[in-house]
Length: 156
Image (cartoon, rainbow, N blue to C red; front, side):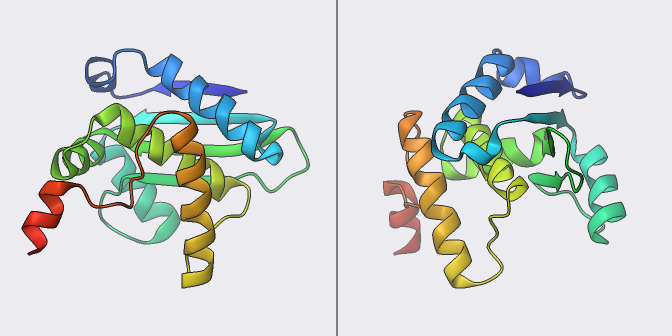
């Protein structure tokens, strides 16, 4: 179901059991979204590499946390997802959550993009976020859109 490619070896140190995490996310996502049955390639890479992908495919010269590339043909291949370690780690630290939980969120987010979910407008974003939260909660991962106590204190 999910083929893992670890291009940036820093991922292995940051999330020691990346294979288990990727497979756990895929297995749970399929329970909620049967359209995800098929092959997905997950690339765990660096900011430098994802910046090149972002520039090539989105005309944005900067790193990003996750990119998704749906497959357009009628094969069993659903698409590719890429995560950038440094950006993901920085975001996890800023949110005071584990990199494993943040990566799970972004893997699920990427998978949903592969089957047509989007967040270009408020209605689409609400639907996508609700599905993400539902899948993540079944994995034991807290709602990534809820503010934690530290974030609430900083906002006040």
